[in-house]
Length: 126
Image 1 (cartoon, rainbow, N blue to C red):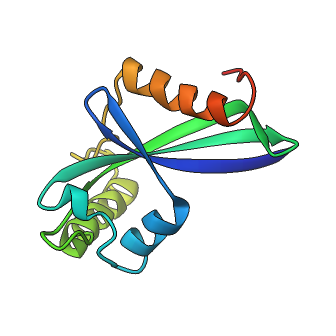
Image 2: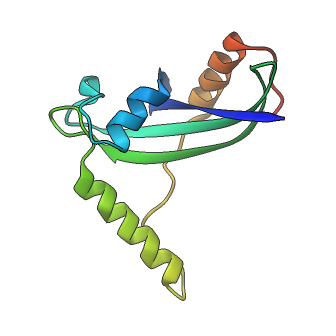
């Protein structure tokens, strides 16, 4: 069993695939890669899936995070740091209460992401 993942920007019911290279440059290196989302808060969903012969066969899980994009198209580092601090507090807090929740992704958006995976491979099982 091999696994892989894909990134999508989710805006309501609309999804847009973004390459791993573009997301990594944006998120990990602070590059201005997502200029089309300048001055916006976006939800980035990551779909993890199994592959067989390099084709998607089964979705394993989905994660999502809300990120703020600066005017130049780079990630808002102060927003990322705020979310990391909130997560650390939630993990160390005895009550585990935090305002940091995974953004909702609509069923329509989920279906569209699955459809894009199917077009690149074969049928998927959940």
